[in-house]
Image (tube, rainbow, N blue to C red; front, side):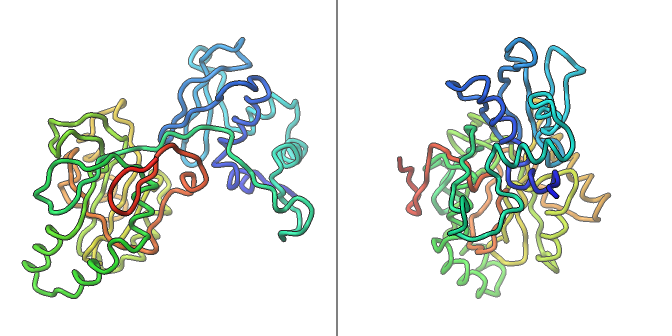
Length: 318
């Protein structure tokens, strides 16, 4: 029997369901453009093709609503039911078949259609932010990069040796000096003309929470990944090995960056008794990049095409 959870897991939280259905109505168009957790308004076939359909990630599922009709809202399976005229197991089996999800089929490269590639039917705009070459005294950005770029460089070997060297320095002042002079860094919350709150060009929709002097890093990582309110965009162990960097998505159109920081800070203290570094309230907060082979990134970014890559020398490449 097919269940909704299985389908959501392999359709980017239901986003591909919308894309698949909308492509049947508008085959020559880019039907969805995703930025962070929200798609740009797109055409609604159930509202005379008006650009009133809004789709956004709510608690791990992409849900829809119509800006002109407050009663028109639901989850991806509700949307699919409107299109196919089916419900329950019939609807799930229809999606499995039409979208070539292969749920319930035997696994193996040589069995029937197992080697078919499922290609996302939407365009993703990854959050971008400024990257700076070390030392920390350099306040001029060297490139504009994405979460996927950061994930690749953190999981790769670029910072492996220097991270190990830092963790071998036991004198605090010497360790701090080494980190400031040997580690590149980013401003996760936005693109800047220089590292200063006043020089913000574009906010990325990201907020960095920094946990220092963590007793059990693995336990904290598991706790935050399981949080029901904030979905992790990126998470990695700090250069020292005793801290954790937690990057989450925020909507600065709802309230300011600093208010988001204070709200999340209060939530973490009340829910888990956690304290966070106060520097996170600064939009231009610098975050050092370290080596972490177990860095976590939101899986939605791993299989979606995007336009820019970033090589390990710190320069953009086409």
